[in-house]
Amino acid sequence: MTAIESPQQDLSDDSPDAVTLFRPARPEALTPFLDLDEENEESKGIYAEALDDGSFLLFTFQPFEAFAEDPAVAHAWLAQFGEALGEIHEDPRGLLFFPDDLDPESTTYEGVIEEVADDALWIPTDGGIDMNALHALASQLLGDGGAGGGATSFDIGRMLEGVHGHLAEALGMDPSAGDKDDGDPPPGSKPPAKG
Image 1 (cartoon, one colour):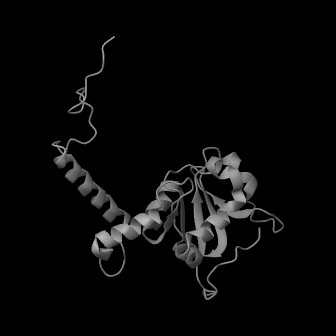
Image 2: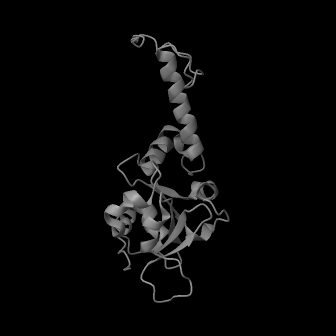
Image 3: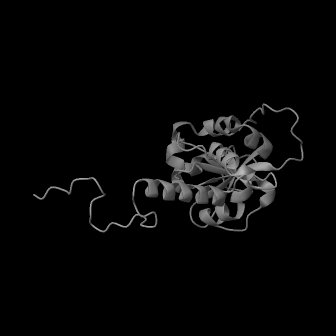
């Protein structure tokens, strides 16, 4: 693996490296890209650690700062997986990148996310929601989330709940109704044809 050239030349050498979290539907689709043998120094794969639930931590050996400042750096690093990327990671949020100095203790995908999410970033892999853009927008709408920290995932969830409530009220619906299916069609729609 060759190092990705960072667009930022002033990154500190002591900056923590980026680690990313993969959850493949089939772990055997990802393992050909990986070096899971700590003993073999001649391996050509990406150094990785398997987690208990079949997910993997992959170590980029690139500064986390570079990924955080420019998501294009993360996309350049991910290019090594080519078309296989869609098969080797399943999460509509994308891939989570975090600094290696966080050193999560969890041995499961969701556990790692829970531990590091506040200091991590999501990189979309399928043209879905750009979580970094969403965080930036939420920070602007919420007044920077206080103390310059920006909006957290919790803040965004609360904001979206508020939007849902206002939309439901504007449509004359009960905002607390949720997604319960009571068998009645939505207001203004035709009941299903019997046949």
